[in-house]
Length: 287
Ligand SMILES: NC(=O)c1ccc[n+]([C@@H]2O[C@H](COP(=O)([O-])OP(=O)(O)OC[C@H]3O[C@@H](n4cnc5c(N)ncnc54)[C@H](O)[C@@H]3O)[C@@H](O)[C@H]2O)c1
Image 1: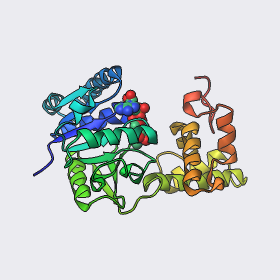
Image 2: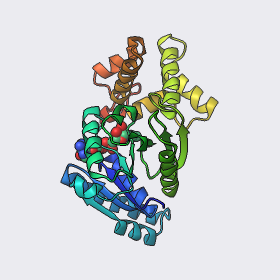
Image 3: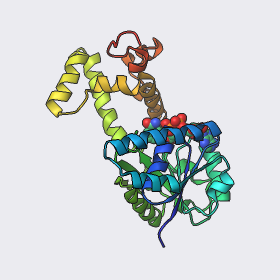
């Protein structure tokens, strides 16, 4: 028996597009959020986004119309979870809030439903003790924006059954995602760890006076063929976001030395948060 019904929890930047992918993949899709206006916004955003994708020929008008017919939204978790086959959680990145949601899902969703979190930093082990039958729980990590970036990282925790991984692999593939499987949990998974290594080394070279921000970015774009240099990317994703990720990494490792570097801390404390504030490693002029 294959899974038919997918519940996505959280209708923010990630959840709304993950729900769209599920609906496009042919699943009866429910999108749940605590905030009613967020659900209205999500539907509005998706209608606009999908109309643009139809105009550009990325999706057909028919498949998009059929997908919207399969998509329903609700603020009632009990209704949302009843009879579902799979749940993908994409709510706010707070462990206490996620733990509460997963405890409720254990109560409202069928015991046979598989459960995944889209968290960027919380491995599913940290949720396993509040979930009944934790063998059905894992991480399924999408990239932003989910409709554009095809990769998902599927992470098997020590509690996760092989069958759960097989079912989420099938779901992700029906959502036309490219699945990378992690056989063990690790902070940051694969993509963000590799990215962090590049960021850390680039900041080390800059802070050691080896080369300028501009020259390191040029070296990486021209020498490695990356579409964007590490400092331009730090500014684009946000100095604050990267500062907080380094703090989490230091906590996870129990090593304060792994925390934010001197330059990152100075920029963060000065409110130079990158493109969004008009200045980070680069100056973008007044915003
Ligand atoms: N934004 C990214 O680039 C990105 C990338 C990969 C993974 N993630 C992960 O995805 C998750 C969501 O991130 P986002 O950027 O979409 O956040 P967001 O702030 O855009 O959306 C979060 C949504 O969750 C809702 N929410 C909060 N508490 C809730 C609850 N108890 N029940 C139901 N809904 C609730 C909020 O109303 C909001 O709509 C996080 O775990 C994050 O780590 C984010």
